Figure 1 (cartoon, rainbow, N blue to C red):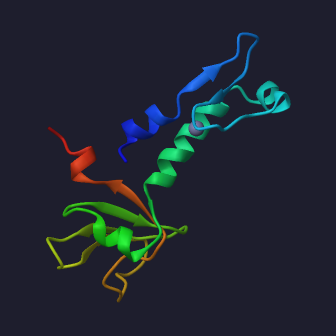
Figure 2 (figure 1 turned 180 degrees about the horizontal axis):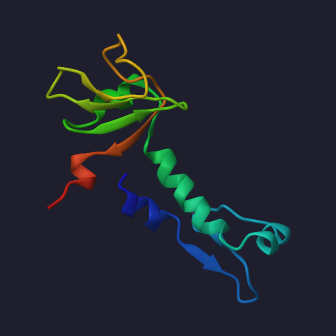
Figure 3 (figure 1 turned 90 degrees about the vertical axis):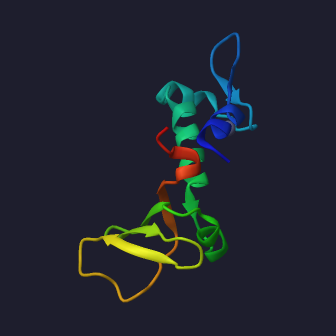
Length: 119
Ligand SMILES: [Zn+2]
């Protein structure tokens, strides 16, 4: 699901008297609204971030060639997907290159050419 589709699935529906709920069914109580008016924006950003989080090897292998991910954790490395079944190429990290041949999971998708490609 693209970022655009996620945003469309989380439209904000406002009550006439203030506050509101998300089209996905997510709601906030009155106290939360009083304390933080950007709750819906935070909710949509969290939905996008979750959709871009890879948690299984199947999801990782389904990413297209040239996708770039960053491993979870404070010092996660950055990897790029090779063609076909050639696996992953280590690009960068805080420490020396890992002996692994694929990103650790979970990982955050930073770029995927079919959704983020420059045209
Ligand atoms: Zn929502």
